[in-house]
Structure formats: C-alpha cells, structure tokens
Length: 282
Image 1: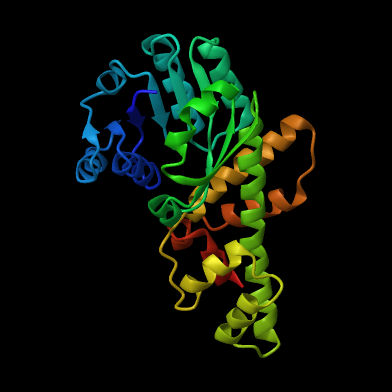
Image 2: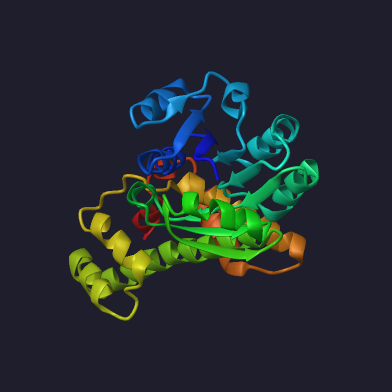
C-alpha cells in the first residue's frame, strides 16, 4: 500500500495519532477547521491541507477523527462523492452504531469503510499505546494494519459490521463506572478515617489495581485534574451508550446512573476537567 494518508480532524487525540504516522514514515496531509490545530500539525511533520477538497485530492487512504455523530454523517456524503473507487476510509471517532450504519449505507460499498475507534487517552496516543477496535472488510483491515500499528499497541478485528462501535461503547461504560466507583470508595474511606493518600496507596496495591485505576492514581495523588478526556466528552459517550442500549431493547442502569451523574456537573468547572474529577463530589 502506498504510504500516503489524508487525515481529517486534528483534535486533542487526532493530532498525536496523525503525528505518530508521520514520524513512522507515512506521508500525512491533514485538515482541520481550526487553524490553530493545523499550525500545530505543521510542527509535527504533517502537511497542511487548505480545505477538505485539498486533503482528499488523490487520497486512497483517509483517516478521520471527529467530535460528533453529526460531523461524521455530514462528512460521509462528501467522502462518498470525492473518494476514488477502492479507497479505504478509517474512521476512528466515537459514535453510535446506528449513525455508523447510516454512513455505511451512504457509501454503498463504493469504498472500504473501517470502523476503527480507539481506547485510551491523549498520553497513550502520544506514546503509541492505544488499542484499536476494528470492524469492516477483513482485507481492508489487513491492508491498513501497519498504519494502525503506528499509533496503537493492539489492533483487534471484530467483524464485518458495527461490532467495533459496540466494543468502544462497552469499554467506555466500564471506564465511566470505574470513575464513579472510585468516587464512592474514596468517600466511604474518608468517613472511616482513612486519608486520601493512604487510600490511594491501598488502591494501587490491592486487587482492584487494574490498569485504568493504576494509570489514574498518579494524577490523583496531587489532585491534578488536567484532562486526558473531559467530563463533557465522557457524557457524550454515555449518551451514545444509553441510546444504543435503548435501540437494542437493553436496560443499562449503571450507564444511566453515570449519565445522570455527569449531566449534573455540566454547569460546573468539572465539565472541562478530567472525567475522574467526579471524585470531587464525594
């Protein structure tokens, strides 16, 4: 496969992903509606495209990292018209399965559409430690896997349809519940006379010290809530989870509880802080 990539969406996680591809020797041409993000991309080996049309010109491999379902659906029609036959679109955003299925219908099999959401933080994007869930045509996945490996430590193919979208929402449900669980655990420990530092030390050494908990302990010690992912972003994902469950006829009381909890802080400073700032409520 030729090592030329058109990249659309250079946000907090899209930029480091694209930069890792550029550092690995891929020719990456990027576009974002935010000119400041384009300037930052230029400092990291990514050529700037002047417009969406410019970034798509001659592109047979396109990656997208978008903030909302609406942005994805709007872009799908443009890509369906602009991409050449046999092109591959690698879509890394967090969106619901129904919106993603609508995108596939718009494309009508003219280009290969890989749903490839990622699991991990901006720090993991910088270090190449993300996990990528992928669904779509297996031959397209095999073709682009070397590119996916530039920014992720694991690339897991799950099937031909919307499996990757469900996987991302399922994993993020566990992430959200972990944040809420830690908030309540710290509050209960405090009421029992256990200090903040002592309880964090205990959590890091006990049976619950799984990777996410251990990763979050470092900023929790100094109460540093600089966002790896904001509370507002996690609420967006929770909304997608609850809606996907509703469409499937499933009850998800834990997801619904966390959705209500995060919706309740959207008018506070916690909305723009890391989603683990929910521990401040306890």
